[in-house]
Image (cartoon, rainbow, N blue to C red; front, side):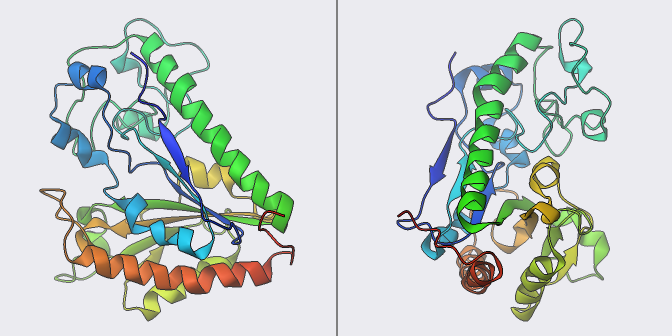
Length: 294
């Protein structure tokens, strides 16, 4: 059965002036019916892997002149923050092709390009699936998504000389609870710049300082240093910066019901303020060419 059309979308500002691209690969929540039929889990349980409402949380970037690419299909269906063929052989009928990466830590944990489990360890499928199904999802969803993301960042580099890719994510409260004294509830935000390999220090520091100034507890690269997208798009020496931002879900959503809380509006306003300082800084820092369409 074909995917809903389109499986992702670009949300563009009226005038694209900021030398940045925002990306939300894990906030999709449109479930193909055939996938729901294959799964032994309810839609609600499948959403436990989702970065709930992160696309909406970061959406004020558009008002500041930067576009957002966001997935519409769920992470439990296909994970866009993986290599194209990180696949778990335990999931599939027969042998996988030799080019499949079956030995990564993510695959071992059941969280490959086609996930075997949701984040709390529950098996997604009734039984093994055909590799042809995985290949179809990768060819029809994953590869077009990444071509689109590359086209967006390349367009910025062509006009502004450099680009910042902001990779937008959320994390369960439990992921960082051990990193801060109780009863604080853990860390509020984790920034991933792959220990400086994916983003210039001054950009990472500006984001970190801006969040701290608004009272948030921030760590860098622990426990998340940045995934495939950050690694693949981050090359500061070539003017390509990529920064992963993980927001503690407990700040804005009820993790049991997946409903927004009063904190959603507060966090949205806080991020809006951050873009108001970050994006003008980038415009000044990067080559002073006008980004808006001529």
